[in-house]
Length: 184
Ligand SMILES: [Fe+2]
Ligand SMILES: [Fe+2]
Image (cartoon, rainbow, N blue to C red; front, side, top):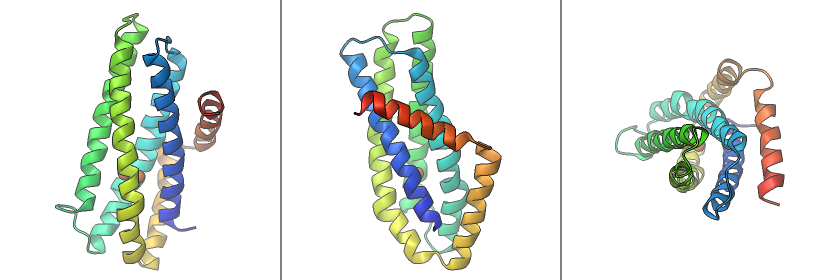
């Protein structure tokens, strides 16, 4: 398996969680009280799997490798992707803040939650689409086998150091559970 295939697989998992999150927002907008535990686990997935694991692989490893291969950071797709990661973190921060208010009993905060969550899903759908169809295609053309091997080693290190043993499995299980609940 090649490093770009790993990132694409992670995209599929993130996309699935975005679909779940949209379905959760639909229910909240329809007047259903959000289950706090569920919102906590979705934000945890986004913070740790989508951001800490996946975006770290892109920012710390893939993007620098692309720069080395002649794709500039500034004024090109890499700069745009980095900017979108930053915007995504802002939405996630907003979701986290809204969640704290929901926990404190502020009923209106669920509207703030859905606002940030829908902003996040819209951003990330477009972001993943651009990576899959533009940046990753460039990467597949430009990265040589030496660069690909170095990326594979780096990805393994991120898995070990940032995620830890069994954490991926935990997020897979969560996704299965939520998918059955919201998307079937
Ligand atoms: Fe990205
Ligand atoms: Fe990505």
